[in-house]
Length: 157
Image 1 (cartoon, rainbow, N blue to C red):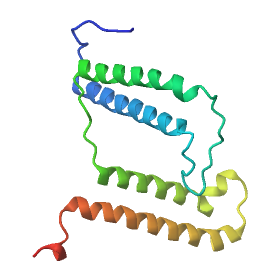
Image 2 (image 1 turned 45 degrees about the vertical axis):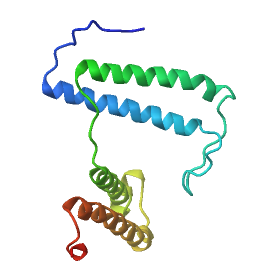
Image 3 (image 1 turned 180 degrees about the horizontal axis):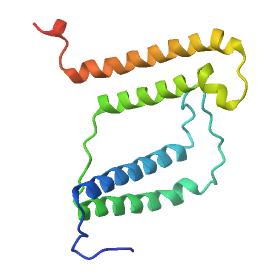
């Protein structure tokens, strides 16, 4: 087992934040691996299908490895004093919406030029569909922003 002495390394605040983000990312990766290992889970979304190509023994043998990794990650967080990272659901949703809208914007006709010549029909027919998706994603983001802003005035007595 890899371990450090009882004296933690000296980190400045920026370095400590780096490790807080890193450790959360590692924990999220383990959670995603656990999800992917669930053989009975078939529904991910209408556009995602995972092949059932894991070895039969994967889930049983991965469980203790994942538990050990998670324990070590938590221990490292304790040693470094990062503690659990408080995450905002609203901010996380808004970040996902921003990421999705950027990808959609980059897929419009002008963004596709890097992939080769763009037929005029892309701008005429596809761009409006992408713009509609962008606006609908933004509507989801606005919902998260409203909730984070406080109670809806119409909900007050």
